[in-house]
Image (cartoon, rainbow, N blue to C red; front, side):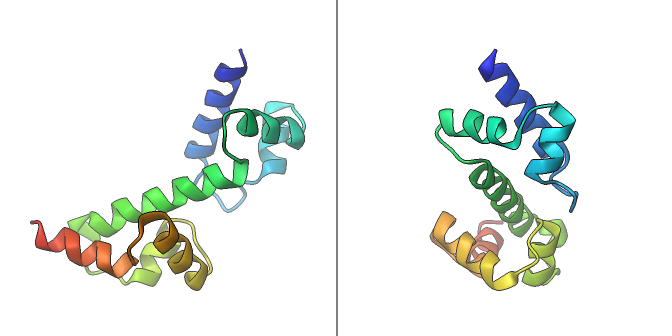
Length: 113
């Protein structure tokens, strides 16, 4: 039951990932549980709520950077499309997660085609 509730929360987060209104408070109200309950569900799975959301934004950014259809878009546009509003934070988080800069990922994916 706990696993099913967590999967439902994750699905809801993914469905709302583009929404600037996505927040722990909004999510808890929609699911009729406290924000702390949501945090505990994620913590029991070995990740934090904010860590999960950040990971999903980073994965979206990586997919966009590898997508030839958006190759002409600037990195700042990709960051915004992926849900980041602070570009310097995006660069730091991306490099920490993938070990490469967004520009490196874009260049490497272009060479493999």
